[in-house]
Length: 188
View 1 (cartoon, rainbow, N blue to C red):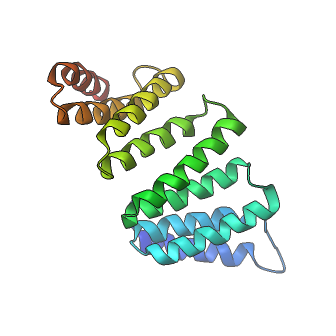
View 2 (tube, helix red, strand yellow):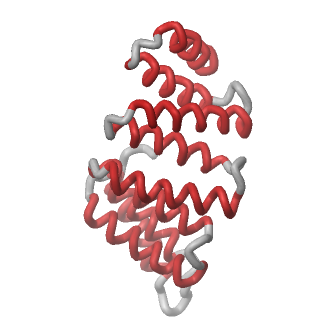
């Protein structure tokens, strides 16, 4: 979170060695550590290595927990974010849609990660040049944000701002203005 990705990568590598230590094995932690390592590699722009490490973690989770477990959704989200950072929007969308389907079925529509995934899918649609889909995704995410987090949560402000930006691009100034004012008010 501080942007010191090399330090994070080194810490995750140490944690991985500890979890794989035959004298004190913690196989249950290995997939989570691998995904954290992959996220740090991705943030440090080591996309190919990140993809490989996250895939290794997901393979372990799939073998241990099956394809419908929320930990697999977490792995898919990490793969999707890595693809997003690498500029592969189609792959990012596929991963996030699979994660969203797993989370919705396993954890219900009110789980906080649902609105995160919807918002990220909005960003993916926007970056892919599909403003109409981005607007739909942001509207759905905003409804979930307000329902789950309450009307004054910072995530509501972020989603409101993202929705307003898409509306501005289609010149919907009258609709965008109150959304932007609401986002500012929440943040203040």
